[in-house]
Amino acid sequence: MLILISDAFGPSLPDKLARFGEVTSDKNRLAEAEVVLVRSKTKCTKEYIESAPKLKLIIRGGVGMDNIDIPFATSRGIKCINTPDASTTAVAELAFALMIALPNNVTKADASMRQGQWLKKELKRTELQGKTLGILGLGRIGLALAVRARAFQMQVLGWHPDTHFTDFAEIRPTMEEVIRESDFISLHMPLLTQTKGLINKNTLAMFKDGAYLINTARAGIVVEDDLIAALESGKLAGYATDVWVSDPPGESKLFTAPNAILSPHIGASTGENMGRIATIAERVLEEFVASSSDVTETVAV
Image 1 (cartoon, rainbow, N blue to C red):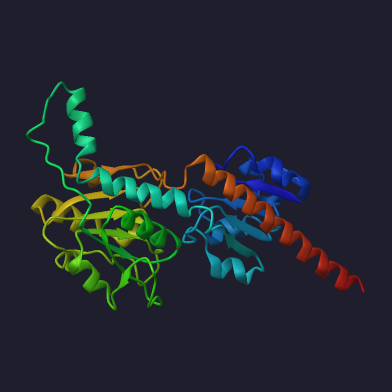
Image 2 (cartoon, one colour):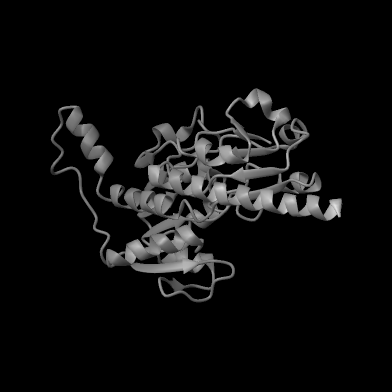
């Protein structure tokens, strides 16, 4: 069995997978691979999958599966499995770090000091304590963020299509109610047909004046031009994002947008998370090999 590690993972992964077959990072050997491990960079499109006639399993190191054509892969008998439990802490901590940095003007303070400026009076701060955080999407990461926000004595509101109760947030029946009541909004939902462009000029108009938006989910959930207009008008006090339509994004109007903190999709990039992904990937492959052996034995009988 050839196992192709197509994107950057932790250093322990090749050794963990070596007992199942030959492990390579040579993308030119895709046609030989029975198993491919990807993160967000590799796009497993129809064309990509057709280039891998022996492929039987795609392991996505991370949560979102929008870079994999799952219907086509399934039609070819290819299993697609992600590692959603691994990244919870890493992404939730980054979202919280961005939420602290925005109202405290951390990046502006640092940049101005390096430029020889002393903006003690100009840079105003806003505390998180007593503010309302609205979380759109109460999956693993959204709930982990809620726990951290409550430790900072924030009021936490949440909306999720099929979540009606949790100990960590006050559930609102509609997304619009969460948006209208919140000082901070954090996005934690997959990029689907129904979530693409969800944050647009209409939903942004519902935000409190001077609210903050944090996005560690998917760039496509936000309409960039509408977001920039809200920043420029002051409707939004700030925006922080770790996600982009493409990695890297090339040119983006966000690079010159006011009150924006931008990071290069590092939400899952902790050593601890890479270790967890490697452990889960090993278990997934172990179960896959075992199930394949069961099928072979049944056919032999």
